[in-house]
Image (cartoon, rainbow, N blue to C red):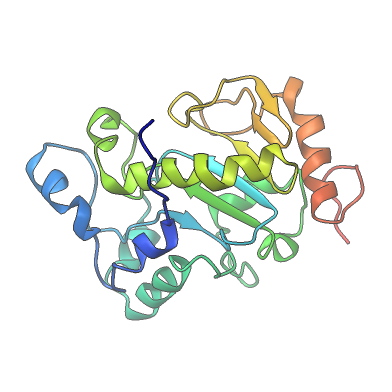
Length: 225
């Protein structure tokens, strides 16, 4: 039987400096194959403290926004993204922001206070490069960064969820993550979702209760400590 190499997603992303927009291992493919990824953005393989977060949300790739595009040339934002790629940085502080980060609306049923969630939730993307829609899935699958995310999830993250040590919720592209939609295994969930990545009602309640419990909240919805 062929031995499967261990995958270290954090070691992989240490190879990318604060201002770099593309992982060195991805350059040849990205620069030679036609694609719709906007490489003026900083790569975002994951958000939040992925090393330790009790709750991890799975998506395909980050979208486009003026704010994120400007971050690509802002030294302070480059440092934030760099720290984030080490796997310990909390989700962005929402206090004083008129426009909240996108993850706030996706997690408000778990806890309405984003400050409580900053150290407890992380987001893992299959592909770290930004686009308006994931139309280059076939090409993206050949990227080492994509393979690293998928490999790490299957080697480390999913077994922890099946052992009920972390709650993992797939909110986009269950099949691409190697999961069966509308299925669960321990605390690994692949619920039905709408196009915005919001869970459908028939799956939502049990998942929310499980997520709240793992971060020390009661079995209700929304209210925090």
